[in-house]
Image (cartoon, rainbow over all chains, first blue to last red; front, top):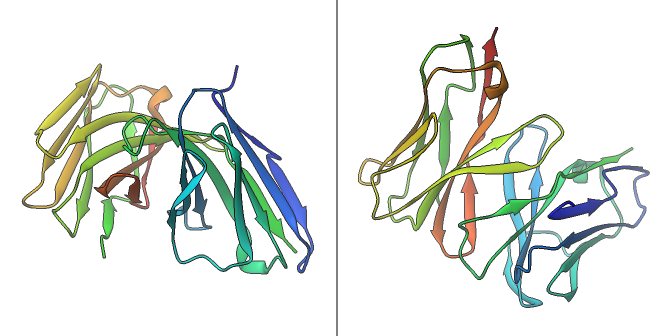
Length: 113
Length: 111
């Protein structure tokens, strides 16, 4: 009974392709996030949505487009994939705009060849 | 911009030892500080949260302290066990809804 689930867990694709990662949470939270963890294990926030509204949009190429169809889902679509996009992408959720009680998914490892 | 540093990057200790992990941050105007644990191939699990007005938090064998004025936090693990082996990350919040993560300390507890 996973609280924050991401699919797929692994994704290997060619440069230039378009791919999506999906995230769902069953915790009743109203805020969801996408984080990127690079090869040096550094975690950095990409996007944050509160009640389906975009709250944080860090300096991320516009090839990355998040979509939140409802409070329980936050998907990440990436166009024209580049080698540097290879990383582990983590979805997380929390209650309200507080970062206390942040719950993470298990990550989606994207490899661009 | 907030920078979070964790030292050491890796640490190996024999089982049963007490140990301290360090975290420092450059901007002391933080909202809170959290310590997370990350197991290989897994997501992050929140261990302890310290609000900016607090000095420490305890959970079982874990104790986290916060000295906001000096930009430091420590995570103390008592009587370490092999199951404690993981990467430990600290993260500071500059305001609601945004965390800045350190690069982590990879802990190995040797049986």
